[in-house]
Amino acid sequence: MNKLIDTFKNIYQKQPFLLVLFISIILTIPWITMGDFYYKGEPREASVATCILNTGNWILPSGYADEVAYKPPFMHWIIVLFSLPFGSVSITTARLPSALSLIGITLMTFVFLQKRKSTFVAVIASLMLLTSFEMHRWGIESRVDMLLAFLMAGALFSLFRWEEKVLKGYPLLIPLFLGGAALVKGPVGFILPCLVFGVYLLILQRYSLWEILYKNVLVALPAGLILSCWYVLAYRQDGSHFLNLV
Image (cartoon, rainbow, N blue to C red; front, side, top):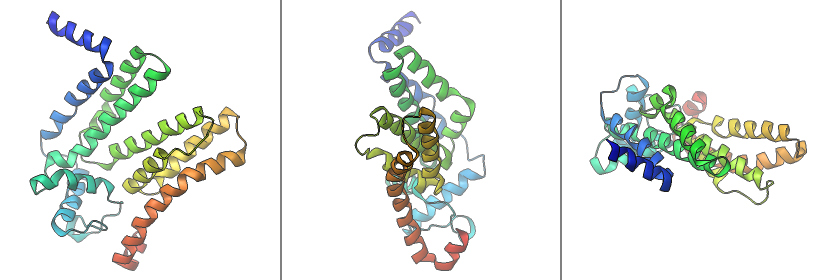
């Protein structure tokens, strides 16, 4: 037991990032392989991914009873990519995007805080996040929420770093995070982070209102264009039925 404690202590002192990564993995990956789907949302997401895998329809796959999925299919694309080597969607591959997203949020939190606070604060805060009930629950279920949270968190962390540079240059990661979030759950994926960032800039009182609006549009517009590409392709495939759904 003492050797195990000494090992963890040594890792914490030399490679704290690896320690957080290891704990994140053992608290998520093994658990997504256990038990059947136990919430109605899980088989819904898995069935949409199964439709893509079976029909090759990557734009507007259907779920139960040929009902068209009402959310953009980015998470389902990822599930399919994980499932391709096995030829079918399983409980594990359906839940894997959520688990990896939770691990990603935990690691981003650690890196962000380690640079701005201390290693101790970063480790404690990231592990508190990882083990909080709702975060962990959504991280081991096949739902879009954790992937959405990962992409939105990545956008917010990147927006904060951009402000640290006094909004100089063009941060390519931000539109990618926002566009990915939009492809998970629609326009809220880029509207909400930009709204939060805009309020934050107003509180700082360092920028004019027009500069705040301009900088937000600068990163939100490409994300909106990414989502619009899917909307156009979906409309071309399903026409007025898809339009009424939207």
